[in-house]
Every structure is written in C-alpha cells, then in structure tokens.
Length: 409
Image (cartoon, rainbow, N blue to C red; front, side, top):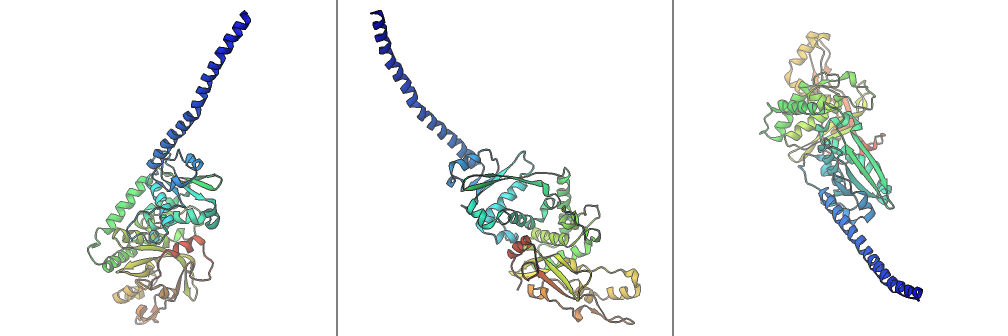
C-alpha cells in the first residue's frame, strides 16, 4: 500500500511538474522572438546611425553582416537620391545616381580617414557585379572622385591608403572599405598645399568675369611652374608628387619647388579654377607632333573648362614653352621682345574645341621673323586626342573618365 500510495502520489505530482515544464517551454519561442526583435531594433538603430541607403530591402542575413559597420552603408541596387554638389565637379555631375552614392561614400571615407577603424560598406547583387564588374562599379568611381578633387593628391602618392575586404553571401557580395592615413606628414602637406593655393590666388581678381579669372590663373601657372623632366619617365607604381597639384603648387617628391609634369599642371589648373567656382575637368589621351617629335606621348593630360556655359580645352603644359637664352642670346632676346607673338605661343593650346585640339596647325600667329635668321615657328602642327575618341588603344579607366567630360564644341 505504501508503494501504491507512493506511486499514486508520485503520479499525481508528475503531471503538475510536466505542466510547469510545458509552460516554461511554451514561453521559449516568445522569448526568442523578443530577443530577435530587440536585436533587430538595435541593428536598425545602428544602421540608421551609419547613414544607410536602401539597406532594409536586403535579406536579414545581409543586414546582420553589416552590424559592426560604423561608416556609411550603401545598397548599390537601390540607389537613393544622391547629394547635390556645385557643378565645378565635372565627373560627379555626369555619373548615374547609383554611382554618385558610391562617390559620396568614398568622399566620406577620405574625410574620416583619421577616425579609428572607420569602415564603410557597399552591397552589390551578384547579378549587378557580373554585369558591370568590380572595376567599373568601385574603382572607376573611386578615381572619378580623386580626379574631381586634386586636393586629395595624397591618395595618388600612396595607394596602400585604401584597403578593402569582401564577404560573399548567397545572392550578394559586400565590400567593406577603409581609407587610412599612411604618411604621418600628410596633414603638414595638406596645410602647405592649401596655403600655396591661397597665396597663388591672392593676386587673382576673383571678382572678374570667368574669362578674366581663367586667363589670369593660366598665365600665372605657366609662369610659376617648371616642367619636371627628371620624373618624366618614372615607372614606379607610386606617383611622384610632381604628377599632382601638390608638385605644381608646392614641390615634387624630391623637394624641387613648383615642379610638375602634365598631370601636375592639369590638376593644379583644375583645382585653382574650382577655388574660383569655375567647372573644370582633367582630360587624358595622346598628344603628338606632326611630324613626330621627342615630345610625343600616348599618356598626356590637359583640361576641359566651362566658360560662360561653353566648353573649351586647355593644355597649360604645352603652353609653357621654355627658351634657353644662352644658346643664342641675340636670337632669343629678340624673340622674347615680341610680346604679341610670345603671347600667342603661350596660348596656342588655350580655349580650343575638341576638334581643333585633334588637328591644331601652326600659323603665322606664332611665326617669328627676326632679322638675320630664318623664320622660326615656336609651335608645330599637333594632335591631342582624348582616350576613347580614336582607335588608339587606351586604358579603360581613362576612357570611362573621359566619357564623363563634355566635348568642347
């Protein structure tokens, strides 16, 4: 009986115990759901704090993978309305909305490169990546941002500043991107560059017309800058500062003051016009003399500039003609005394149409007739052809960037 009683008692207790266990387990899904809701809300708040674009249309596992991102987060396939900037940034104005958002993300990374572990993310669908490719979707836009902003010269001189990693999901790939300060002297260089640009513009009348401002900046630039022959054939992957606006306005990597090659002239001209509020872009292509000469190059840079609503092309590098007076003092002193002809020579590649630049002939405007000497023309027949406008093999990046710059007509 004791046993039976015990068993009965035991059996009478067990159902109650099981009920309690059941009740306990029945709350478990609710607890888990609540936890997911809390995590989702936290992630949502975190993502909104990170300046999201189209993120919440992504699958939950993709959103979860972005939880630690403290910079901008962008869904390329759902572009929102991008920021609007002044029309001085020529490449930006001609990008699609989706590409403008990528451009803005890169700019934000540059501006926050000193922040510790600052990282942004771009999500692409695999279909989009397969259609356009990584270079077109990321790095072409990155360089569009760089070429629009010559003040970011430090990005050209050390490509290790940009770092990225990828995470592949079922239908998406996430690019996590960082831009870091590599050179400890970077801030000093930036300060020196801004000071030099301000000093340069100090005696330029920025209240004048765009035509007057452009001419004053052009003429002062070719007067101040010296062509940087030592780095002309430099094959290093890392750019010398002479290829940048810093070289033209401050110094090249060897410390030679105001020394630059065509890239430096063109970036400096672009930046100074930007400071004056004038739209200007950086053009690349081939530049040849007719007939060929030692100055021919398949990798040349010049500018496109918008003046009073009309586009022109300008090559400040080839307008900067230097004469070695010591070779023949009598001849060159007589040449340099002809102010009108010297002016024509220094503006031969100034405010031309794209078609004119492609086939620009020497004329009597630059022909010097000096007593006792044969007539001398200081320029040649030449051809400047933008990358992408001929059958000549060109870098795909150059072709893409040039496609964003209006033709001068």
